[in-house]
Image (cartoon, rainbow, N blue to C red; front, top):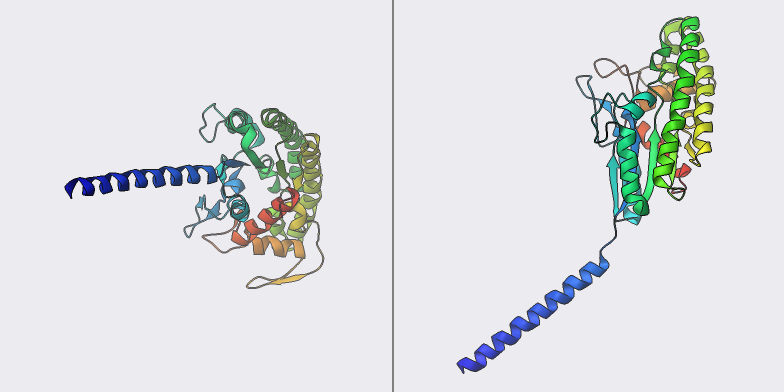
Length: 292
């Protein structure tokens, strides 16, 4: 009786091991291979928003997080990698100086990541260039014009360098999507006639700047998420009412609705998008990428 019991135990162990081995093999065969969504750029790529004290902080509500959340159900192996740096300019993205990266700069880190994972890249998004002319919204019309003339050519040239290195590292098959910008300075409209003139003037300059950025992205087969258009940046008509603020031109109203620029202190004024604004940006990215 004892030997028979031993035989039954031994058989049970063998069967259990066999089932475990088969289960492990099946689970391994069902494992979803990893793919990557690499988000590059400035504070928008990190979802920065002001907290209750008015300090700009990174959040999980940015466009990259919302793009990722939309894609994940259909791409369960997808992983989000965010390398963006708040305050980054086209120059610091190339040379470093704000955030710390292995390799010395965001561009170096991104290129290394792309080379290492080229066969598994699903999507790359990039927003860069907003901080280059950031101070151009200050001062009178002549100061603003001079700022754009001196700062914009360098930013456009730098973007060409950035895209050249990213495309070389990623290869032609990897989907890279750039972004045009909304214009927080439209909120100047609320400061009376002088503010209205500044808002109109900056909008014209911004249109030219975004067109230059779009041209660079196109040279490297990168479609552009038209955030400039989604925020209806050039539309000074079609008045809208913003609760707590009043009736404004559509472009100014959307800045007030989708960013913190018109918010009361201490949260505002702050140029970063709010959750709703980041959702708009995410939808535009998905459309430009052909993933909506």
